[in-house]
Length: 474
Image 1 (tube, rainbow, N blue to C red):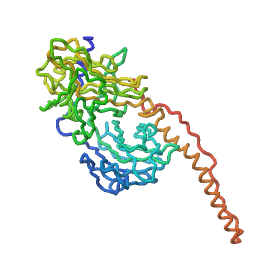
Image 2: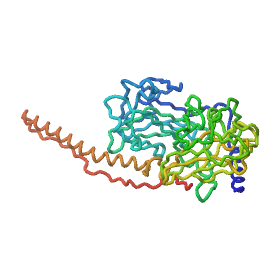
Image 3: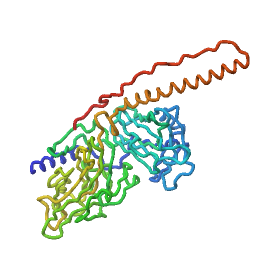
Image 4: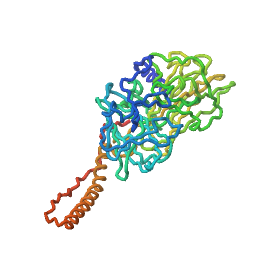
């Protein structure tokens, strides 16, 4: 175990030195905020961000659909953000195209909420694609419910255009979206290397950046909800109460001082002050070390791998070198005798984070724990955790939601809707021609009627699709 602790310490110290972070406020080169279906040039949301309507002339080039409509809620909920008061509805595959000035990792957020009115949003069944990834399948979410849904991704863009495509399913009437965000991410936000933790091994893996990531959980441990207004990447962090398995023996701490962000360490884009200045801790009050762990559980989908990021910042110790603890992922030891003093250049209140890749097993639950180690000290803090992020990694066909690749989704739509479309057109045509013949008979016209030939062949589509993206065996 000593070798494991030493190896991990070297790895994380090296990772900290490799990141070329800047302390200045982050200013993304690509920053698109689109209020879909809105005729207003600018809409200000509850977090004081300015969204541009996709109906205005300035954003007409983003939307390439020729068969879409814009809808407005006739009686919007006053408690909902203005970006959820309108929507863009699509009846066939439709695209938004965004010019990319800064290739690399980008934040992509999709906002959904049904509108009041005659349209039944429970019938909205569709896929969302982006640069070869299948981001979303609405069959997995109750779109007819009256709550807001935000789908949050980090995907790589290596070209000068990011294309987001909405594809109605074969049994659906439409797809829709209320708002879209496309923002270039700092190049250090996600590293290419992490520690793979499983029952029988704990090893370093490479190639993470060949994948995309969907944020499943973003949790401020021991603190309050953090809104996009208080996060430099406009993220939302929720409280941990729902996920904490047991709080026996633990306590919350709040820090009123300054967080010591360091050059080469975690930046505010990795985690904001409001995450690092709160925590849950285990503290020994006497000469004995508590025999307990703080544990959080998160439901996940089996069959996917997950990137787990755990945020630490020693805001509770009275002196350096007094905090040693173990970190567990799915009940497997991920980090032994973590010494925050060592990994933060001997500074208190200095943030540090660790990335782990784990498998979503058949249990459907991902478990995280921290607890005292064999180096923990009496009359001291014996474990701490400030924040958690859990991100789903796309599967081998480039999907975050199912086993069908983006290419097959488009082909399947064409085949499924083509079988319905041709008979409908034929029926309409036959009715029209019958009306013409009857009309001519009544008026005595005997000229021959010109018949148009209907297409009779429908191309077959092979829905089996290999890896559209390069598969990474993590």
